[in-house]
Length: 402
Image 1: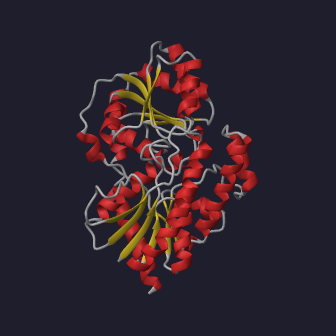
Image 2: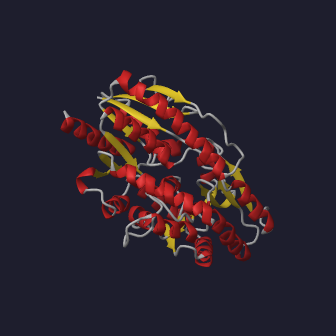
Image 3: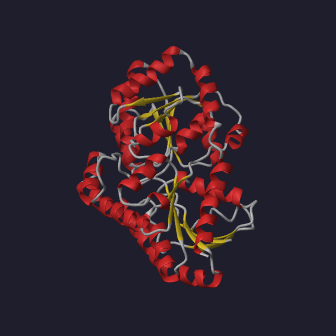
């Protein structure tokens, strides 16, 4: 079987390698041992070529770089990449004659290019759906309701409108795919609620690379807390400042390290400085997996005030490193980690309750017990099982089309 994957991933100015990118790379590692040929058309810098010479990678570079610029400049870079990829990928499909097209993430650049090739070639399209930024299942998503969600999350009117339009375009393209692989039941329920039939949805999940995490030796606990993720408003990064200010009022000189990159990085630095928290909140930017796991292991508690998640890979990896987690009580995190005794849920937007929960963990001196609970829970998430389920879903679709 031959798969052509359209793999757009933002540059380091927008984020470090995120959960969707990590998932695809982990899945490819397993597929490398199977009888499957994968051609990957990806944005620069190439991430796949280092995995195995078995995978053919075709780099489609960006026409401009939005490094250090605003969100609209980043979007312009993406639009130009899509235009370039739409010119190149159809000819790649004609030459390679894939059995199936794969969009490993449901972001708009991946979907637009993959669907364009699908429409021209009639090759079946599979989309891995990580999440949509819509926390409720009691109503269908449309531009108006999604706009309200983004406004509530703190985005400006103009940005909320653009993001709502983008959301609607993504959902429309996902509906036109032949199969959706989702990472959680919550995401699957969202798709069902919004008109995608059950027979086009397969729930596969995510994994945690315990072996890789355990290769990093434990460090002395230098930081009281750590956040890992994209530095963007919907990840709750401004809530972090309010939360940690409250923690510091109860536990003086407490240190929080923030790992990641994103469009709101400069603004976050401004907020930290204006809150007189620069000596308590340290911004590390993006880093390698080894550096990341070393920082996590050098911390006591993992903070994750994200408002929208499809699974929560950062939470899973924090558990794999032995940390307790404090997070907002959102559906996907509750589904995946609700049974874990070392994950503590707080109401969305309640900085005081979040801070109280962190301080309580410190005061009860149960970090050693929570470490064992976290590591044991993380072992249930296996990348090989996930990758094989993905592959079985794709193969079944291909055989049905023969």
